[in-house]
Amino acid sequence: LWLTHGLMQAFGGINIHNYFRVWYSYYYLYYLLYFGLLWLIFRRRDYLAAGAMLAVGLLSFIEYQWLLEPPGINPIRRIMELPLLAGLWLYWQQPRLRYLLLVIACAWLAILNNWQFGLMALAAAIVCLGVQRWQRDNVTGKTGDFLLGTGLIGGLLLVQWLRGGNDPLSAYYLAGSAAMPIGLWKGPLCLIVFAAGAALLARLFDPRRPMAYLCLFLLLYTAAVMTYSIWNGSPTYLLVPGPLYVLTLLVFCRYLTEKVPVFRLFRRQTAAVL
Image (cartoon, rainbow, N blue to C red):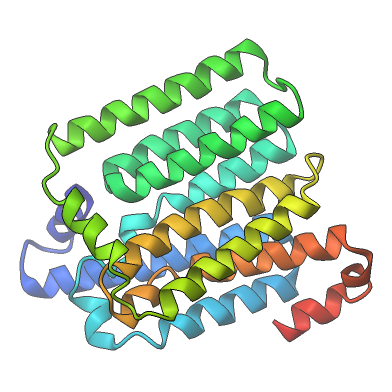
């Protein structure tokens, strides 16, 4: 809200015209950062093109009026997930304290921006960093453990402060998610897809490969975001995290081409098909 207020003031004042101008500009900002993240992870034009076309293609299925008006649709609510993912990727490639600090800072900013999605991202990051700590020993020493603990405790304190100690809507959201409002077959289908992804990753997980940890993070975080989106019951809300679905698909495909010899032979063809 403070960012929107500041931008509206910069554009000439608070009015409905400037509101829609600023609100719509967040889509450009999010997707520019998203394309940059794709390039950072894959460093290949075919994957960048596939990710861009699939993400924008899913966006085109959302009605124009939905893109402008409902605050829950706008990607500004999840924009901090992109620098967080970039920090995690850099850390898993080169475990340095500055990248870990970047991850913690982005997680805290994500909580301040939207505590639900920020808490999902922080929890998924802590789980993945904990798995790395367990699989590859302590690559950053006691300082890294201290920063992880500080990041977790600080994030939980931020959530408690933002909630004000009271959250009467929690039971309401849980009841809506448990009721599977998107339909009897769609809900279990989503669970089956994520269970299959978890089983595949558990079978092929290689602690030496950064892409394996990225697969784990995206699986956990995307499942949490999708669960949050299911509550509304509208197919439109399921399309809102479209870039996350696309990134998860691309990362899993890339990991399979690195890990499985059969897929390795068709690395270029896989990107071309996507």
